[in-house]
Structures are given as structure tokens and as C-alpha cells.
Length: 160
Ligand code: SF4
Image (cartoon, rainbow, N blue to C red; front, side, top):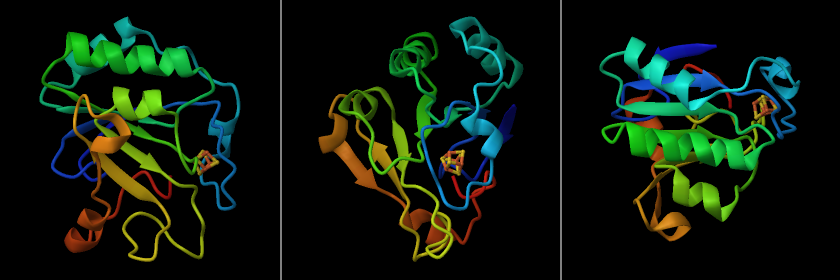
């Protein structure tokens, strides 16, 4: 499923795509169907069409990282190469992600959903959203989670 959202990534108009085969194991999983092997493989041509159909978006967000790291990195590379004005973002349910992901994405959200800690817009949340300076990887990651608290916004996709 795809949707245009404005709250998942601060200051971006974001096209969000759900990715199945979730590796997470969140206690309060809100989308158990995303832990299954469902849907169709996301291809560069699919990405191009989605972006063409949603003029004005400036961020492409993968909601989930699936189980195929190379395919995930390939999509991130394609967005950067074919759509230079568009940032690429990932919401992961894991505590941490591979170095290659920190290098390939402009935004990364990490951390499982823990009901007692709350989602990104709750100051007690364990989840973190990072903005990454291109070319710097993990070393260039800035924690911008507090942007959700100042603005009091509610990431529409829920706890992940
Ligand atoms: S990351 Fe999302 S889909 Fe995966 S287990 Fe956690 S809440 Fe469920």
C-alpha cells in the first residue's frame, strides 16, 4: 500500500510504501500482516511510476526493510540516482540497522514499538528518527526525534 503523508518525516512531503517480510518482533505490532511474505516485489520501475503519479513529493519512505538487504539498498540507490530532488527514508523496527543502510538513506527510524514507551511523538519513546548527512553514514546521523515532540504531531503510520 502507498500513501502520501506529511508527518512521518519532518518538513517533507513523503510518499510512503509498506514493505512486507518485517524482521521486527514488536510486542505491540500494529501490522502483523507485514511480517508475512505478501505483496509483490518493488522494482525501480514501480518507484518511478509512484513518484510520477504523486507530483510534489520530496521524500520516498519505505515502511519496513524486508529481508532482502541488497534489494532494499538497490531501491535507495535508484531513488538517489533517478530522482535527485527526493530524499529516501526507512522505518525499521529493529534496534539498529547495517552500516550500508546508514549510508544509503537520508532518514532512518530505528527501534521496536514498546507500548509502555509509546510511539515517536511521545517523549518517553524508545524509537529514534535520524537525519543523515549524505556520504557520512552512521557518523553523520543526527537524532531529530524531538521534532515530533515540539510539533506535537502524530506519525500517521502508527508505532512503527
Ligand atoms: S516493525 Fe512494524 S510490522 Fe514489524 S513487528 Fe514491529 S510494529 Fe510489526
